[in-house]
Length: 229
Image 1: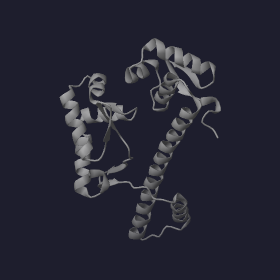
Image 2: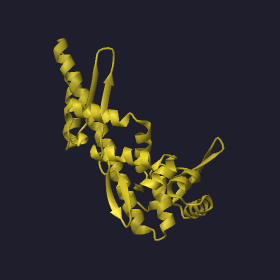
Image 3: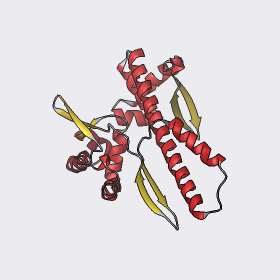
Image 4: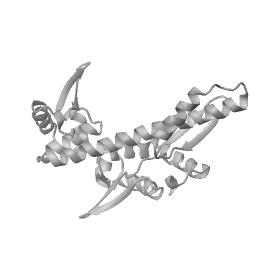
């Protein structure tokens, strides 16, 4: 599996996989919900054979996994991968960013590095700045993980609180960034009229808010305390 190691060969192979636009579109769709092949094919206007080839490559690389439900096989993303790329006139570096555990130690080390007087020695300065760079990458990865954990908690709370399946699906979509009725309708295969009705009901109950910008109506989840403990 490419994502379980961080050596140059594995990272290069991972970047090569992600360089394909078709695979990136599939991954973007899978961040919204698990999908089966014909569903991906229909949503992305891509031949089923091509979808299958992309999915097989992504599955072999450990980026996606699959499970069977009845006669269908669903594909989904079940892990977080963070890659840091630095390209400058002096450096070119690609690294995988692993979770660092206790972030309080990272913040403490970072604060100490800021507070210490910087030596005039170029090597000491370079080492100190390199440590700071790594600390900021660790912080970025931690923030990303915390966002994923928050989304998981919101989805769990929605499952516990709401009883109507359509309401759950629409709120899932909003959480996953599908902020217009058109996007929710297209991704989840629900009629536009049904999505509008559900959004209007959720808005009346204070679970979503309506925003209009440049003539485009968007919705954001507010939950009205649903996801708050």
